[in-house]
Length: 336
Image (cartoon, rainbow, N blue to C red; front, side, top):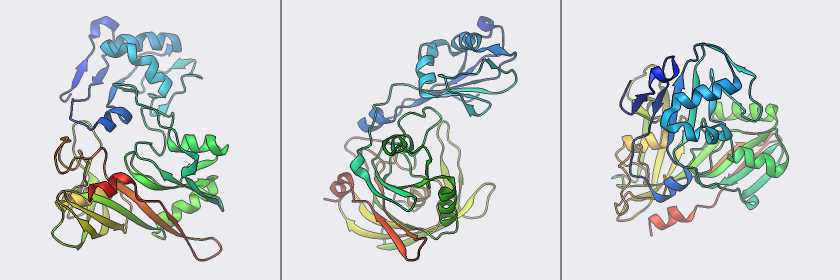
C-alpha cells in the first residue's frame, strides 16, 4: 500500500487486517480546520458473516488507535458496506462476508453550520434556489449525511422530495438549485446536460492572468493524488476524460491577483479550478490546484474564492428565469 497506510496486527483478530489511511498533516486555513477537518479511512473484507454486535467488536479491533472514533463515525453515517451507506440507528441484523467494508471518520469533529432561512430566495414552479454559504456541502458526503444543504433545506421546507439539481463544491458559495420531486429533478438534469442553463461564476485568482479575456479548453479527467480527488486538463481525449471549455474575463486587478468572471460552456467536476490552474492563475485559497496555504502569502484565503453568481434557465411557460446571488464579502475584500 502507499504511504500513510498501516495495517492493524493480523494476529489480534485472526483475519486479514484493515488498512487505515491516516491523512497527512498539511497547512490549512483556520476555516478549513473548523468546518472541513481531514477524514481518515479504513477498508477491509469480512471473511465470515457476523451479527451486528460482533461486527462492531471486530471493527474496533481492526481500527486499532482509531477504535474510539468508531461511534462518532457511525453517528455521521460514515460506514459503508459494499458501497451502500449504513444507517447506524437502523443497522442490519448481520454483515455479510466477502464484500468491502469502508469507514470514513473525521479526525476532529467539524463545527456545524446552520442554513439561514433568509438565504432561500426563490421557491416557485417546483424550483428552490438558495444562496449557498461556503463550507456547507450540497449533499451527504461519504463521511457524513448530517447537516448538508439538501438535508437542512428539506427540514426547513418540510419537503423530503427536494433534490439538488446540480453540484457546487463545499467551499463554493452562490446559487444552488433544488427541485421538488424526481420528475422536476430529471427535467432540470436534462436542461443542464443539454447546456440550456447558462452559468456565471466569479473567482479571485493569484497571480493575475496577463490577458483581460481568455479561453481554456481541453479534456478534464482524474489525476493522481495520494489522498484526495483531483482532476487534470489533458490536450487530447484520454480514458475517462471529458471535453470542457470556459470563457474568462478579468473584472479588476490588484497587487495580489485579479477578480474575474467565468462562463463555463460545460460542467465538469472542478472545471473552473482545473482550467484556471492550467492557465497559471489558480484560484486564491485553492490548496489542491494551487500553492499550499500560507497565512501571509498573496494567494492565501480562508477558502477557495469561487462564487456561483448567476444561473439563467428556461421557464416551462417560456422566457428565461434568472437567479442571482450577491457577491460575498471575502471576494470583494480580496481586490480592495
